[in-house]
Length: 71
Image (cartoon, rainbow, N blue to C red; front, side, top):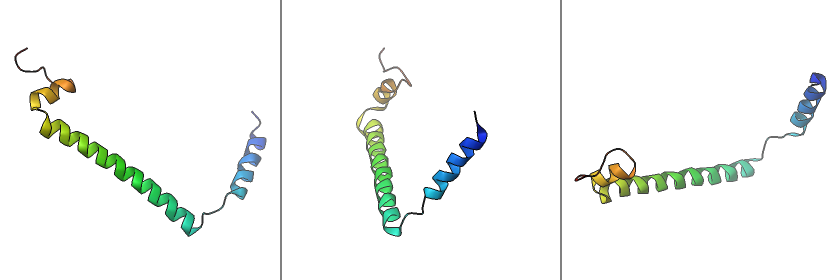
């Protein structure tokens, strides 16, 4: 492994890199925020289904926490 050669390639990449414009940064931030929000809503809906719509003993058996009653 030739360390000086690796360092020159890293320096070349850093020289080509630039700070994004505010519009580009804003668009990326909005898309990332929408993705995080979507995952959060999906997790909330799954948790709501598991803990409110499915009886507790069945929810536990589905995720492996407890055996259903009567078994």
